[in-house]
Structure formats: C-alpha cells, structure tokens
Amino acid sequence: MGNTFVIEPASEDGHLSEIQQLAHAIWREHYPGIISPAQIEYMLREGYNLETLRWEVSQGAIRYDRAMAGGALIGFSAHGPGSDAGALVLHKLYVGAAQRGRGCARKLVESAAERASASALGRIVLRVNKRNRVAIDAYERMGFSNCGSIITDIGGGFQMDDYWMQLVL
Image (cartoon, rainbow, N blue to C red; front, side, top):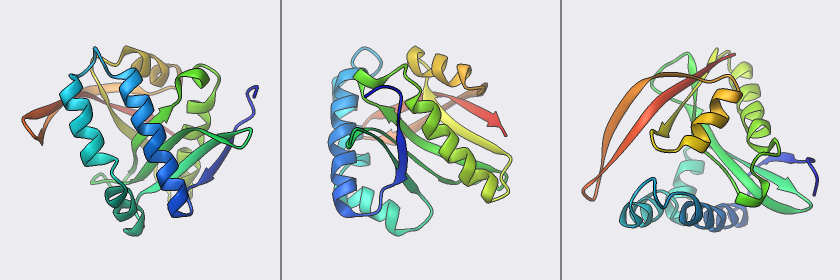
C-alpha cells in the first residue's frame, strides 16, 4: 500500500459501520496496559455504538474523516468546534497497527487543519491519555505541545486522565 493515503469524509452509514469496526480492533489492540479492559469496553460501548456515531454526524458539528489506502479503511479522525471559539477539537484520531508510522495520522491532522483554517480557527486541540506514549510522541512530532492535565469523570466508575495538547496553525 505504500504511503499513499486518501482522506475523505465519511458520507454514508456504511462508512460509520467500518469506522466502528476499526475502532473496536484498534482499541482492543492498543489500549491494554494503558487503561483497564473494563474501561476499554465501556468506552467502546459509549463512544462507538452506531447510534452515537450517527447522532454525532447528524448534528453537523463533528466530521469523520476516513483514511483509505488501496480501497481499505486504515484510519479515521473526528473533529469539530469546541467550547473555545478559536480552536478546532480533534476528538478522535486512530490508525490501524499495520499502518502506524507511515504518515497516515499526519494526513488526518492536515485534513483537520484545512477545516480549521477554512473556519478561521487558529489552533487544533486534543486530549490524549497520559499513559499513551506512542500517541503523545506522534503528536509532538507533528508540532503539538502539551498544555496541561485534565481529569474527567466519564461515568461507569471510570475517569479519563489526559493531557490537553494544541497545535498552533
């Protein structure tokens, strides 16, 4: 597949099903040792059920981008406006294990940056688990800086213990 990626918006329900399937595979492969298996399953149930994905897209604020290579979905991102009027929030960014380190995440961030610039937003912000060293390192290589810590109760007896990072465009 090389390093040729096509980034396109998720435009139909079937795309969301593919995103859901890829998210489940990535989370179960990547997050053990970072968060508990129980929290992984809770977050997949809450954040990646089809009803939630459809609702997010139907609201018009969150856009899912699909990273395609050779006709296959290899990664995705979700981004939209947040409470900070000057920033685009990168809610989700995931790349399949076999494709990591080949520039796919960077292409997804570049797509989000294009949307931010088109909306006259000067920054992209995101949250990343403090123990997710692979992702933190990747974001830092792309120019994101750590802006501090944030802990959020997400229900089910779980918390997200994250760094807040930003990329100034």
